[in-house]
Length: 169
View 1 (cartoon, helix red, strand yellow):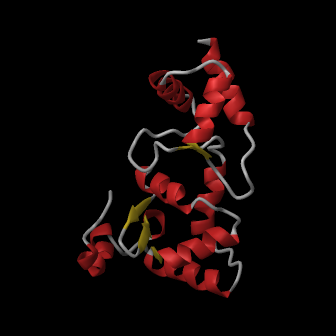
View 2: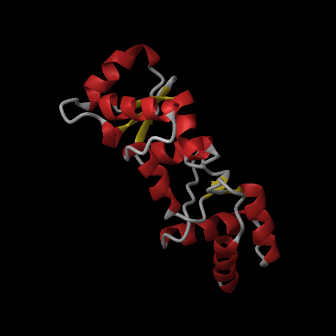
View 3: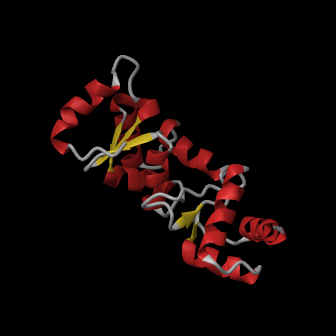
């Protein structure tokens, strides 16, 4: 439908507050209504359609369905902040070293890295990375799968964290 195309255009043009990388579903509903899409199933179907073409990231899963990432290309910068050694202060330098050596970053350090890079909305970003298989969520932080040392297999990385046992894959 034409309203879906207009919806896509307005989503892509929507202003994001500085440091935000996604729109809340409340804002998405406002945009949908402004272009004549009123029913829940139509909004979700339109988001899934637009996501299929790569213009947005919308994942209808718990913890992510409340967010729409309108600039998928920005996710590269977020991932780069975890894999490129670009320390932005003493605290982020230590965190980046831990990622490089162990592939693990605790929640506080993850927040420091993302804040230093100007990224807010840590919850949706973490959920997106876990859903995409780029990270494994643990109680005390995340394992950045691409940063596990080459000699360490995933099972070995999880072994010291075995007591955490709430692994979300």
